[in-house]
Length: 331
Image (cartoon, rainbow, N blue to C red):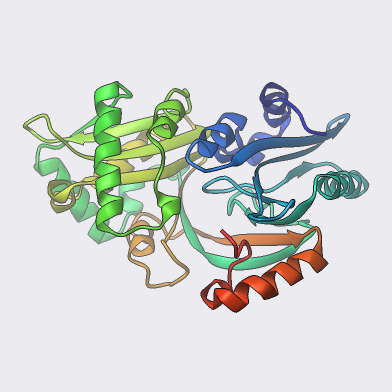
């Protein structure tokens, strides 16, 4: 059944800690929709005693049709289950029926590598790329880093860089300006840009942290946003300017938050993967310097109306062949 954000939060918090990530939190799903056009946050839940089915997603209109699609928020999503097989089967059937009743054509899901919620998914599942996480149960974090990363951290520390934990408006504004400038410089895709209100609303949450690297002239030269929830701390977004990159502040920001999360008994710090599926991706190379622990990232899809989806796809791809590999080819 479709529930309010308040009811969704109650159900979400009933899930075991090992199945909780801030990417699935109702407030994150709502905030992420602020950066998207015509997407509505929806919370579908089903319960019986201690058995739970929780699925938070964005519902959007398929252009020039009366159909809709479902997709995960930026980062990760998909259904989370707790219960025996007969309960899960019943919950999935209720969810599928809701989708049919509301003209949902297709769904696209990004599963969380640490929650492994691709298991028991009712649609097609595809491995997309490798991701990296730091085991915070390791006593000496610094010794687990590669020589390259340890050297970069020492360089940042010797450059008199100070790491500030603050969500004051001044630090938020500097993060937004620096992040947007970097994405423009990289000609990043539209999915990497966010509305200013997104950052302002997101950073109000107590489980969201903004760390800023400040030089000896009190100027911010790099910043990172992290999440925590359940047993998991997560690396969300990061940026730096030319000075920050020269002084390796991204390495120091990660290290400082890893220590912070470790002290608060989080089990892992999840770093994510690269910007594409290549094993040679530069961002993946950066993250691998912090840990040898990896987990595969999967995506999934399910066509609720395969006939109409196939007809639209044939028509659209004839005009836009470069979109052939896209599940949501019309977006």
